Image 1 (cartoon, rainbow, N blue to C red):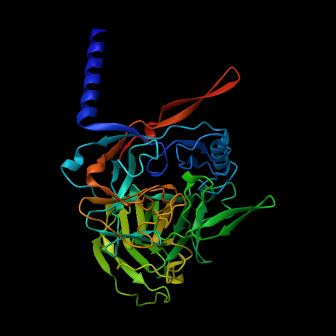
Image 2: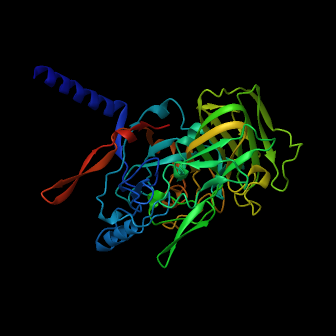
Length: 493
């Protein structure tokens, strides 16, 4: 007992000292930073594809209460649908709501260095705190002192140049588009991934969850496995799958779906290759089409080529814009990350970036952006394709992610800062945006769009005690008990 008391006393003292001098705990009530940080939310599993679903409330003003607000919340959960397959009968209105994420915030980090772009920062906002119950907010730093910030076509522009992310930064901000491990019940009849050519050797396995090809005897052309985006429609009780553009749909927002086309996409996949040949990835952002070629089991150079959308690859392909000596053996599994985000090629094999930063020139937003369709020579049925030549390969765990598409307006504000006109930041001023752009009250919406340095509280660095609800059935009743969700405990970049 004495040892236990000593441990408790030391623990209490450590907590008090930590809170007073190093870190402080906060709870995230709203979903303005979802899915990176969850506010109060409900969770379930899609009955059609098995995908885990998290839906938060709509970020309503906490002072708005009463029956009407409760009815609006119930309607919001009733309209929620699966972000992976579109299934709309989730019955979330019958699920208990779980509390938002708990954060630890480093209070003194910014005394030693300045905030960096894309960091999550806790701050006070004196211009709005008198209208809301909360007096602290968490957003992501986008604009730094002395910069000019402009938002258009989903991207952030700093001093006229697009603001780019590293692969590590993108991993912390990416939003899911489709996970091929969670196929809908009829997914094998309407595949998202398919062999582009009618003579393709790609064969679906595990009901379309994995794909196999033996192209060791193939001639000089790549055999392409391409992605097409399908949207679920229900008419008169009949379900139809229609090919459509990838939109800025946020599963966390439930029935609040957006209609803006997105263009920054990344593929995450596992590959197993045998033989000696080439692996190719085709990517497009609607302006340019990139062809990446990587030697597998051969000594050679990995290359990146910019292929114009109006020409086909011939025996004389365009010269590479970058070439790097590369040798990947065939006796290992390959984890591939390949994306074209913010006009930057993001490419890593087994966590190691092959080319570093490959940046294409900034293209100011215009009506020239095409739909995400690559040229036929790149297997261009969609925004991303995998090609092999001279290899036997297995492809699985195919997941597609998109970048945050910053909306140009927020329905809860008459202000549209940095949208119609660029915002100039002065000394010690920052521009903040939420990841859940369609449902975030941030610098776009405030009367004064900047947060001054003296109002910064600190950097969020740890989700330390996320919770989930455990259903308990006792004596014919049903209760939900909040328990720690260790799988979501993580350090924040």
